[in-house]
Image 1 (cartoon, rainbow, N blue to C red):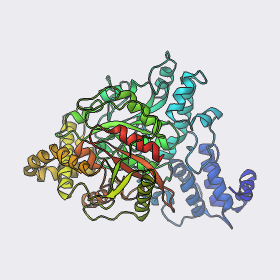
Image 2 (cartoon, helix red, strand yellow):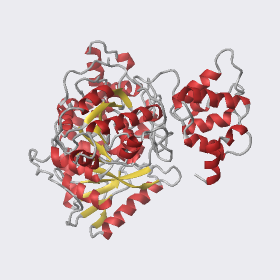
Image 3 (cartoon, rainbow, N blue to C red):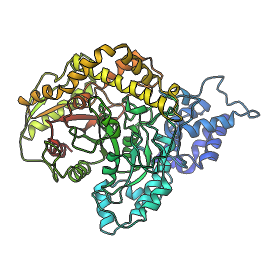
Image 4 (tube, one colour):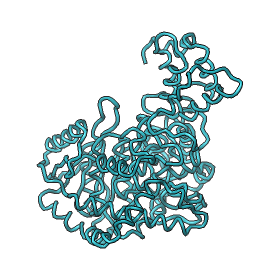
Amino acid sequence: MSDNVASGVSNGQWRANLDPGAQRLVQAYEARVGGLPDTAQAALGAATGALDVAAVERILANTCAPGDVERALAAVQAPGTPNLGHGGRPGFIDQLAGMRTGAAPMAPAAAASPAPVKGAAAVGLSPLAEQTKGWDATETAARIRAGEITALEVTKAAVERAKASQPVINAIIYPTFEAALANAKDAPREGCFAGVPTFVKDMEKLAGAPATFGSAAVPPHVATETAASVAQFMATGPVSLGKSTTAEFGLTGTTEPFYGEPTRNPLNLAHSPGGSSGGAAALVAAGVVPVAHGGDGGGSIRIPASFCGLVGLKATRGRLAWMDSAKKMPVKIATYGIVSRSVRDTAAYFGEVAGEAAPGMAPIGKVEGPGKQKWRVGLFIDPPLGSPVDPEVRAATLKVAEELERQGHHVDYIPAPYDQGLVDDFLLHWGVLALGIEQIVKRTPGGDADKLEPWTKDLAKMAKKNLLKMPGALWRLSRFHKRYAKNFERCDVILSPTAAAPAPKLGHLGGDQPYEQHLERLLELLPYTPLQNASGGPAISVPAGKADETELPIGVQLAAPWGEERRLIELAYALE
């Protein structure tokens, strides 16, 4: 912030530039929230000339919580108040890509001030909340163990940040703050994340919290038991602050519910954080919590990690406790995991929960830095379907390849390790899942299949039309791991982008898209990650740079043979 702009913020000189309608809008916002964020004041102070309502609305839309701006507009446009001078123009908020009017968020958390997102001052946070937001999970747990801070203090700070972030990024579907504070007072915990605040993705049951799987079609019954996968995660000692948002039943690569407000990428609020673990990634990227629970059935940990500049490891099939949903899948493509701010958090987690050997796999063990082994790295960038790859994504992936070569690894191009047939089979399996979901919702007390989102319904319809193809598709998918393993006869690690472009704008994969368009966009943007879900092999997404114009993160993916997560973590350390 320049000295001139900072001076204008501090003394409010920008107010003299507001016309009467703009003044009423600002006053209405301040009355609702208690003050404008520094970023909004800086933008108003940097503007030149008179500011009308349209100009101020645009500035507030880009720097403040959307819901607060909409309510401020409603307040000054209520019957009996003077017109703001829009001339009938729809509000700028409504024009933001992906925003939908009419439907309220299913369970918004109470909030008072904007979140501490990238490029914005952390307005209104206490010194403790500011101090602890930069710690990763490993540092947080270490400070608690050393007695420098208590789990209760850390939890209070995280609750404060969660309340501040919710109106901005909308990443919390069910807060359990009171229970978290009570839980944090308990006796000292055990585990690598002992006392660390976190959130659990709303795709699994957590006792004491509702489980709706991101769907308006499912009644919010409070779970009385905890799923095995969540129990394994919680056994490492974290304190859950509630449930994070997800795409409906994890079926797409964004977190934009058809019947509610989208979850926003804290690094650029006009863009998606990815999906389906979008809420988890947004909360970690915003500094609310250092680590969060997620699930990956087609890239749902790795995609949000890529879009939000985080680390996301999808484990080998069978390495971790099974998700409840995966147990019922014809081919068990899904596994749970975490999104983290640092490689060492991911290493600590998998070193603890996968410390003992899973069937047919060696234990991962404790990984504390890069390994000494030099690997053959197979590089592929262009998907076999001919879809475009963003030039900056291509450049970032090549830069990582060059860095690996500089470190002594041998990098060579390989053909894409899958073809159109795998895509078709995987999509049919996706349709089977949607069809099963539709039937389960119909049998669930209080469930309403009519409220399933259009994308879910259309996937189910596609499955019904292709029932005769299902046996063959499922047979091939169940054996794909053998075909995938042959790729590692020529290399030890496969390097690719995580996604074909940085995070898209909200609405690009929105639930109101026609099925064919949604599918085309999904396949073009996310052609890499389903490969490991189909094969069962492990893969990790790590940050690899930023897009020039949007400054959105770009991630690359490293994949290895079954059971070789340690190899991936060592390489991730080397690239961090």
